[in-house]
Image (cartoon, rainbow, N blue to C red; front, side, top):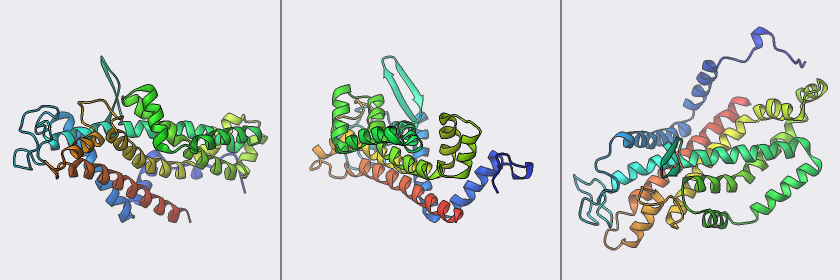
Length: 307
């Protein structure tokens, strides 16, 4: 039996109970816990770097291409900068802060990867729910435009966007948003096609609710589980995209540390200091793996919990 109202005993649990349930589901998955531990490690390193690093990340204070020592735990790069300090500071770009401008410097909380995924989920979710719920020509037009965008290789889209707009945090966020939105839209469209056949959608339409109300208050909340898991997976893709753009010299402007550009710089001097390339590459790999493990474990547990 369906009803448009809930009795007091059937009201949704409070926020604290929802968080406790989510934490219980999370801790029951070893995969999710392992991934979360890796993410929290780098988040902690990033927070620490806001107040302390062993050496100034951009200071050319040592001899070039030194091996790891007690003073320089990961050695130095080709300009005599401490690699560990630069790896620590590079975490801020990914997870903690985004520069809206450099002169004067305006910074907002949240890393480039997070804002890129938020943008992709926002744009893609809006397009997908409209395509799925409205159907007809709206669906056909939106999906044809997105299919045309998907036809381009992702790296080509990155190159076009960054080349046209220049380098910077906001441009990288925009590139991640544009390349990620089509995938999110496809997912949300599929969920909307299923949810719009449910009885509570029919009840809302019978009450005379607007299409906007139904999409934002009925469809999106009931699709939030798969969207959340997909968003977490996309954080890993975004981190990898930042590293790729940095490696190609199209990422964040120097001299501030960027893991991708650190890999590219170390590659040029690999014969003089072969181990230097290992550290930023490991940072990218472990953070991406951690995010993916967390998302995979949470998805498995949520699926089992709902069955």
